Length: 251
Image 1 (tube, rainbow, N blue to C red):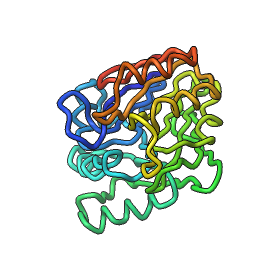
Image 2: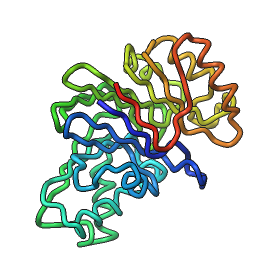
Image 3: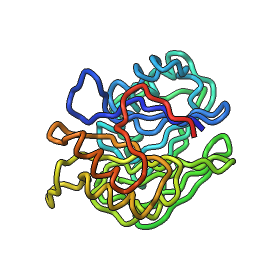
């Protein structure tokens, strides 16, 4: 399994880092995780053909994580695509898709393909099968817009966990236990009780419990000191680095 970072930034414009977007590749299977604006361009830059995407998984419905869903479906119609494109995410994802179609009409609808939606619970553990024999396990995140933590496991056992956006969440450490790759947001420089995001010590606390093999930090806002964040999480004894657009991690 290969984990591609398509966007390691936030909603703030940044010439080097786009909003959240990732790709999991396993054999011939390609699954998009989230996809803020610009994800489709960075997917093309990575050399991954758009038509080979087998489905999309969404941690939540804030625009910096899902803004390219409409453009993606429109592109499938233009190319054109000839097979279904399944979506997976928290309760409310179907309503989100219906809203996009109400706004854009036939531009997001085709007779050649459908967009089946699988919704995972926001009040407890969720599990479903993904294309290519992969599995998705979820836990509710401490955020909004139907937010979930995601764990994708390949048939051979390799696994990647993505925090999505979240405040402190015991469920994240639980879901991340023993993962090969733990991809975690670190949006804040320090705790802010009014903002449901993580800061370096909160990430370190989750990593210390989960003990993954490797950590990637993402979603830094400008006031986060990168060196300090890496040092705090490194103190757990787990290798950590900041994610950057275009990197690929083989698991």
